[in-house]
View 1 (cartoon, rainbow, N blue to C red):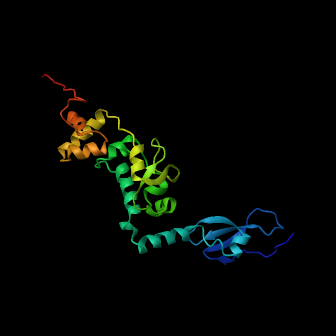
View 2 (view 1 turned 45 degrees about the horizontal axis):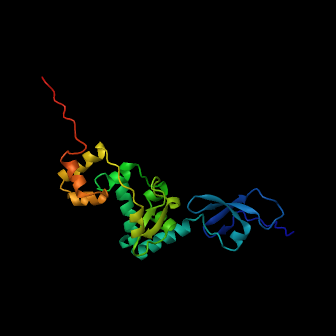
View 3 (view 1 turned 135 degrees about the horizontal axis):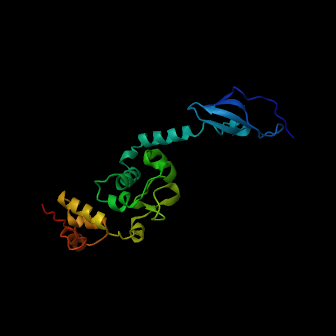
Length: 214
């Protein structure tokens, strides 16, 4: 068995500085070493990965390269960036006509994606033309495990009809009062304009009128 008595303590490999040896068999070429990355993260790395320059950071280098690519190639104007912002609008913006079906219906975005387009891009890759972001299980939120790129036609077949209730009816009336067109509202709720019109005119989901006498 090959022995390695050489200490790596204090050695620098890329962004990693070796702090000490990890718990592993003494006489092995695959020993591991505790390292600190220049960004402050600490991790354990195998000797072969350090000596071969296979591992040069905690992962922050790859993230920075994604950011660099993001900026260099103008991905703020890309379909991928649009899908990310559209996802956030549906789930977080209460003024969006899509909000009742998403954020208002309990659909959430995972912590990894909610504030980082770079993480979203790293997990999902670029959105190709004609594709859209689809949740595999419509009862779960947006995350790497539950999302995929699919043709827009496929997502349309997977959409679930919205169950209307008094809260959504009030929101629809609010939208109409704020000059949203009924045809546009119907589109977002996957229903007909006549259904929206019935809600607006209080033919369905009627508000109870409470008369007070003095």
